[in-house]
Length: 325
Image (cartoon, rainbow, N blue to C red; front, side, top):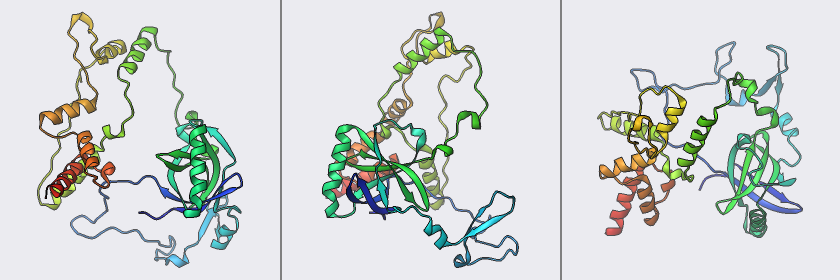
């Protein structure tokens, strides 16, 4: 279990529900630190006074903000910051309910799982979950997290309530604010039809198990190899069909599976990268990540959803050996 990031009250009308928020995500893989070359000495960052260069003790550090005038700041004491927190800083009051999918993914910042704070909150918690689930609605509220206030959406997810913080309107940039305008002619009818056909032909269901953090896996293998005193080398896969294609239309035709190419050439079936990877793994006698996830589920391997393919293979092997004893 992990520590909650927020403990407070979720207001469903006049029904108070005590909840705890837990982060729904965590970053995986090796953490890279900094060292001075040729030594085992870690590089550390310390708080220093930029004028004197002397280190400052944590208890001597206060917050400050720029006034709008260059190099002019005001100091803000902790009690002053505490005084201006919203009156209900430990309360999420849902002010309205939106249809599912009403908020564009661009607005989402972070997501947390919400659990009942205690047994007395379970009945109201389950009632809210069921009501949102059956009406296909999400609750809109605000919450104060880590000294910042956020808009938040409360919705049923994986059998529990989830609370997703959002960006404020003035924090979401328009494309024109950050990039030059996109110019050029509208796509031609023939090319557009080919593009739509390619999208339909390669449409798939979302399955996160089909994706793998290949860089994180190779970084883990590199760290393990160097820890054993050995070496690790990686040969990147060569992409198929790397030749130049003059026209977009011809490139689209070559991308379509089971479609004759120009000049009567036989089509070369193209499979999604995940299928090619599975076929390559099968040819090498290796189990695919999907197979390993299924076996890990049958063996009740903890933490399996966060493991790489190699970690799954190792964990499944240990768990299978334990059952055979």
